[in-house]
Length: 561
Ligand code: ZN
Image (cartoon, rainbow, N blue to C red; front, side):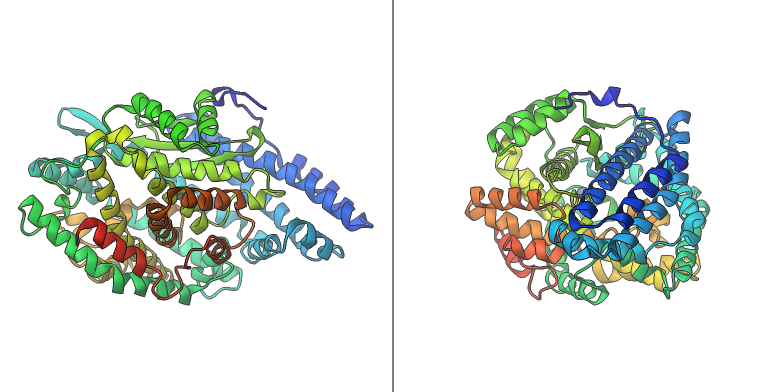
């Protein structure tokens, strides 16, 4: 077992010449193979190369996020971004060769059919003609990340990052909530032109890539990039309708009760984060204290999570504190050659710290559990399935919340559930918006803002921006990282949440059974497409009518509605 501490991880950057040479050797071996087993052995060599490259690029990406102002990390990321399309080109050529291999049957028998479907998506979404566009896209995405990470806000006698400012949205003092929102949205207003232009360039660039690859617009290309194999746009549309029908009315009721309980009428955008006049529940200690409680929690849960978490701690594979220059957001990434994942967050002292932590730990445990898979393609499933692992762990850890919240644990659970339900309409709104944006790539920024306002009317009918000019103009999505950096990666959360809520209902009946289903799903990793993973776990696909009905009914009872 590799015991290296993350702090000491160092890898030299590969060069294109070196990698293309290695690929050429593997390709020749495949061409010369005279048996299925020789072809399988060649794939294993290629997989080791891919693991090495993936370890390197993940490390570069993590280090850049940890300190976006470090010149060395920035340069490493730029080099990586430039090399990446060339490496994709080599990988796609290999995938093409494997798809046409005379030993394809033997390969399918050994590795499963699914990987060939995944590779088909990769082939359909790449061609060397878009190499430069991909580099340009990465540059624009990094520009957005840096723009957000660089800004600091002086508020209440302290300096805060944008991530940290979010905590004031649940402050008990209404004036503080309002001022904090004026401040951060004011900054967006000042930079409106820059955000509008940045996004416009991204949309046009993505449209150009789609055209070069023979698509009418970016949407079908995005579905291929997301490797959506067993569902399509019409299924997603059906799911959004399901949310409109079953969840939006419930959220209107939730907001009405929230307004009543706060004694505020009407509830304004800056009030939405506070759900209780007594204040939202918070973890009862700081970062280090939470890590200790987490150790106790995973010891109680067991099933390998205890040992796994001990390793994450011992090898320093977490960066959860917020600090200047550190990029916002939270994520989990895998370092295949170190045999461990890494989790990243920006704690701000609110209950979302705990939610982000269990969320990213869910990803981490899944990918760790999947390392037995024969191919790197199977370490992670596609992202909507990935989010089942993360969101389910948020729910499966419910019985242990006393450790973090003491006698406020029940309040935490109620709020966590409430906010999950409120998230569903927002999540599908972000997805619907992107479908509209990329269907009309030549829209003006103002047209796009109007499209978003239409989404708010449809999915978030109680939302009132008041004097917050920037979001009131239809630009709230400019704070949503995914819209810039991970197009069409958003419905995934809502699809996954639909599954996680089912697992939550199951856990309320039999927690051991729910944990067993969860563990098995984690071990399966990405060996099957989304619907197959979901149904094999005994869950209803989000694309089935009524998929949300059971969970919504149970949630209403649980919330006393
Ligand atoms: Zn996630």
